[in-house]
Length: 127
Image (cartoon, helix red, strand yellow):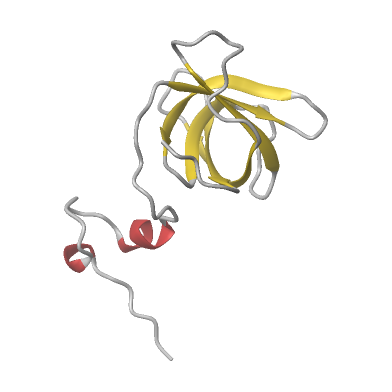
């Protein structure tokens, strides 16, 4: 049995030069949107990571960039607290959101090293 990888020229995406590995690595099936939201990740022990601005989000997940040092790894689970940046800190967008880390990637394009974190939500987030 052979595996055929799509070529960048015939993958159906409008972005020229998109590598086949990038196409196969994409896991989200919902459209990503940019919204001015702050995300806080809460561990089982109650410790918090954030709040940090979301890079983008969809109904099934979100991406956030955090400083190095929190020990985020694929497979970890967090409670996710989303807040609108223009609302008081006590106003939450949705309660009871839980997510699993599905991707981490070192980001060196900023002044300080950071980790890009992809989270898959357990239940859809209705935007």
